[in-house]
Image (tube, rainbow, N blue to C red; front, top):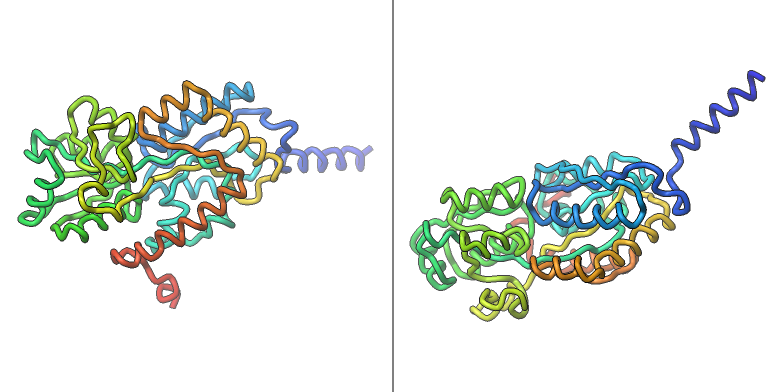
Length: 327
C-alpha cells in the first residue's frame, strides 16, 4: 500500500509538471504579458488577443503589464515560465530582432529561446510633434528647426524600432537630435503633450487618439503609401526619404519548447480572431496591419527581418559587439 501511494504521488507530480496538450488546454486562466506600459500598442494588442481567446476557449485570458527595460522585463518573465501554454506574451520586432543586435544586456536567441506562435500585426512609425508648443506643422519646418537647435525625442526604449527610425531619419536629414528612451509609448507621448520633449517616434496605433484629438500633429509616417484611414498623414517616402519604410510589428510568443500541437491550436485561433470584421476594423482604424502566418512562416519572417535591419543598425551606429564584450 505504501508503494502504491508513493507511485500515485509521483504520477500526480508528473501530471502537474507536464506541459498541456492541445486537447485539454486551457483548464485554468492564462496570463498574457504586455511587455510595454498600459495604453501602448503592445497593451492594445494584448487585450485584443486576450479578449478573443477568452471567448473562443471559454476560459479567462488576463493581461499582466510587465513593462520596463524596453520590454525586456516582460520577455524575461516569459522565458522563466513553464512551456505549458499558460504564460504568453505580446512581443515585437525590438525583442525578436533589434535588441539582440543593439543591447549588451540581451543574450538570447529569439528563434531558439522563445516559441514564436503567431504574427499579430504591425503598425508604421509616425513622427509627431505638439504643434501648439513647438510651432512646427510640417516635416520641412521640423528639419529647418533641427538644423539650428537640438530636438529631443522619445521612443519606447533604446534599440526599439521607433528609436531606429528616428536615428536613421536624423542622419538622413542631417539634423541635431537627442534621444530620450521611455518605458512605453504612453509616458513618452504624455511628456510630448506636456512640452518636455520636442518630438516622438512611436506607432500610429499609440499616437492615433492624440492625433485625432488634435493634441499632436503627425508629420510623416513610415509606409509605402498613405494609410486609407489617415489620408492627410504624408509618408516619409513622398517627402524625400524613400528608405524610411518600416513597421513596428508584434507577435504572440511563449516560452521555449511549447508542444507543437498547442502552438498550432493557438496560432489558428489568433488568426481566426484577427479576421473577425469588428476586430479587423478596429485594427485598421488604429493603423495596424495584419497578415496570416503559420508558426513556421512567422519564424522565417523573423529571420528575414534580422537580415534587413542588421546592416541598418550598424549604419546608424547602434550595433554592439557581443564577441568583444565576452573578451
